[in-house]
Image 1 (cartoon, rainbow, N blue to C red):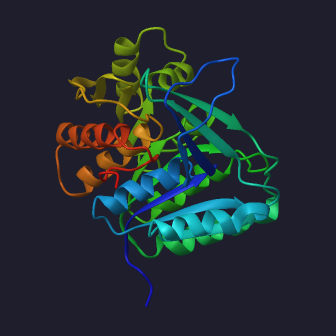
Image 2 (image 1 turned 180 degrees about the horizontal axis):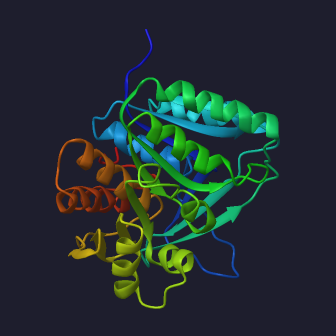
Length: 301
């Protein structure tokens, strides 16, 4: 029997995440790690894992480079992720997080492997996406950038297919892809959750507050802007509000934005107000930053 899906997480840029812990890390010297962890990651994978840990029936759709697709799939299976993938050329990229436990900081190293999609694989991806939509009851989260080879049409087409089925759409991507997602009064994202830098870059704004009000009114949309350890700003069709951050002991910030997106989507689908859903997202992000794993809200064992 096919699995029911409350919220589908879809994306186009997966990553193998290696997290390496050091007592202290000194630049320019030999550093010996205490231990390391490897996780299936990328924005949509992190969103799906957080939703799963939050008790949501979810699934994740992502392309995966053939060369290390089996490793990625095994890591997803280890976490119980219902993972659907389309094979692409090359390897899934590797991202390495260096955690300095003494200074309580982490640094991210991103290596873009030669993974690339073809036009045929884009068609296959869209076909699988449309097939999964038939089993989705509430919402779709589309997050992250596009791998090389995927056309500028793919994300707007995913938006169109989602909205034509009457589902809620949460967008966590930026620049041209985001602007192209606003096609009509009905074919568009319902909620946009991006960070401050992404918002300012996408809409060419100099001031976050004024720009958030202006763009939310202009696009007749809801924007939620994460700002790291600072408060979250949101605009509901031009009405601005702020949600203060939770002060916790940080360990690994990778995946916090994805955890916030997951909590926001879950909260809205459960009938919470926008502000309460943002608070849910903030709390998920606070749980994530205390975990060694990206896109993780459960206590580490």
